[in-house]
Image (tube, rainbow, N blue to C red):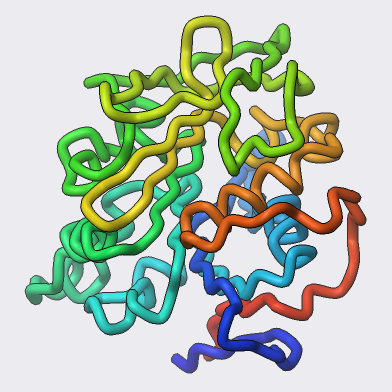
Length: 287
């Protein structure tokens, strides 16, 4: 199996911010039953387009690994992690990173990539975890990060069980703290349809809340910086009205710059929508 980057040429500079986004993909297998007969169909989707667009717009060099690719190709040593300034985990459970096929299928030892990620943060890396059904604890607690090495560096405490707070009626977040991430943003956001119940650690800073629950929390871990965002960056928790919000792109551009330690005022807060992704490395598998 050959791993290929299916993106255009990247004109990198010494100051380019390099980000690894892992997760935000899923497949759905459906069983169709029609009387005596049945058949199955399979669909594959990716949910990070709004975030990817926002980061590309800001000239950030992004490597995107869908869940099934990250299972094998997520960095397995500190040298490989050192190629990135920021790692974002979005809707990808701990088991995907802990149990590559060589371990789960063939019983061979592998590096603990959550331990490596923790150590990379403590030595100066920037880590963000974005909410979803397989983030933090997740649905039926299957994301299972609460007792992992990442719990040591993330700026929040996680619940023991299923931590989802579904809000089909819609809930608006309040941006309530001045910070490089929230520069130029204030007041209430468009509505979200769900999030995860988290508790900010005592030494962390909460930048946005939904009622009494934190939406966006940041902190320091050793020489590194960390961020926890308790909702999603795509459906169903984040509807189009949220990702199309004029503050969505600046929020994430500034968040990544802050995590990387290169935060600066954004020069353009215009949301451009769809356009060529010149700074995106998308890992795709080919037989």
